[in-house]
Amino acid sequence: MEIIQNLTLPTHVAIIMDGNGRWARKRHLPRVEGHIHGMESVRDVVTTSCELHIPYLTLYAFSKENWVRPTKEVKKLLELLTLYLDQELPLMMEKGIRFNVIGAIEDFPKKIQARINYTLEQTRKNTNLILSIALSYGGRQEILHAVKHLIQDVRKGRIQRITEKTFKKYLYTGNIPDPDLLIRTSGEMRLSNFLLWQIAYTELYVTDILWPDFRKDAYIEALKAFSKRERRFGRVQEE
Image (cartoon, rainbow, N blue to C red; front, side):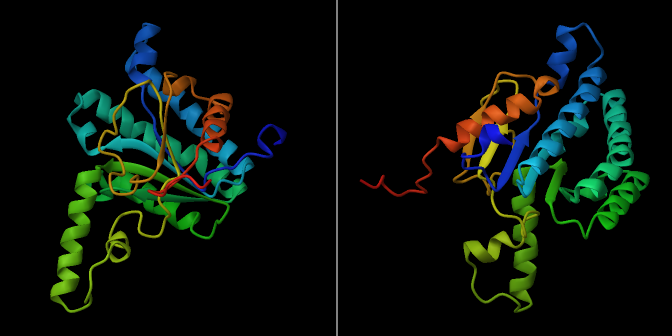
């Protein structure tokens, strides 16, 4: 893709997909319509990541807190998740995308857990893109989950010394590099309990574009903005 040939691209992009409800409300449509159109944006960003050979993409789809939304909306979101898994599996196989989930899968109904596990198994040998979907995910909950399992292994004598590198292995993202770029749509200036450990040195990019309107061109703009950043990781600028 010529437009970004000379740009420094991130290895791992994470996205907080926000604004589906507002998108629908502005058009006097049911909220679910925003989620449906948002699925098209997911496909656009996923395929573009493949085209650009970005190896890791993590999307915040359903948070721990989302379970308290109205029952009707939660039910529809679960239906859309099942639909997404069914519809997008052929694309994942065609593009060499490995599906991954971070979060508490056990929170979902057994039928959805089965669909998730089936997709994980079918795509496990794919290597072009690791697509991680955050489902029933919370950053604080992830850290607590990691601490509990780390304590168990310390008590069993499996861990002698606790370091950042050791701790990272107990996170849902243990085998995935930390994000280089975090994109948030809809203009909200908050992290919403997403990847709290992992984004310590991640570049942040916030756009006012609502998620259903965040397509390839908007994604390219975010990547272009990232390429202009100077990442110091606590060091001073070299003269």
